[in-house]
Image 1: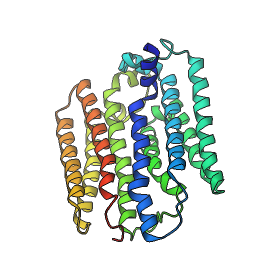
Image 2: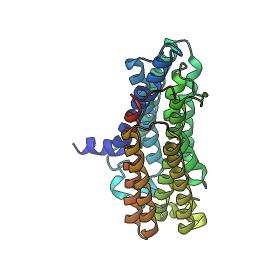
Image 3: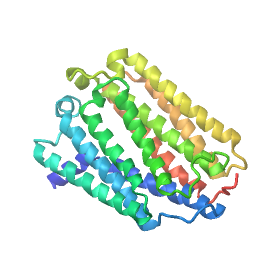
Image 4: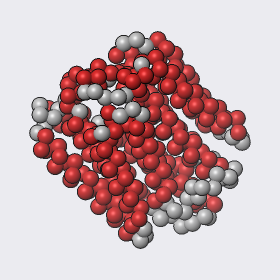
Length: 309
């Protein structure tokens, strides 16, 4: 049982569930309805292939979390000693083996989907994700901004990749209402992840400092890091306001979920202003994770809305 709990911590199981839920909902709520209702193209993905794609993404993320902890033993020993499982529970060699195995399985799943409709070039998305996660763990995480940008980009890519694997979805046709909403979710994923990554850097400042990391709070200071997060959240708030203002005949469920996100983000801004201790920033990180979940679930509101706007 101890090993099972340690493994759940190692792979960040809640985060993996978020990833799978996001890809399933974005296909069922946005991509599939538009392709069917607009008669734009035959659907390439079905429920089975979609699940394979989500599992492939999940395995790559799990492998990424493993290799990140592998290279972060020193930092985590200071910042999160209770989360350190490598050497205490799992051997370093075991982590490397699992990292390779999970990535191979993920690539095989993606290869099957690509071969299903003879588009092997889409495998590049998985290769990019694996490569970036590896370089992030070894190098980018310790660099100013590039580490935060990498994780934010990969989070947005987890949404974008579903549309890429479903070529019938007109990703570039922003005249369509659903496509605009789709890009809004991609921006939301990028900005909320970027905000959370900077907050986590503030939370982990002590351990990062001992390992000579050049994170935003270490290079520019905690107050500047806070201001940076304010800018990201204000950008996100502006996007949500624009969505509210320019949507036609907005359904009450969409209005409710958008208002909930707006209020939640304003509350986070307030909590950041008050935050002075590590525990404060840890709680803010958790708040942002819950806001991410609300954002994911809000996709359900769009599943039955007329996509002809």
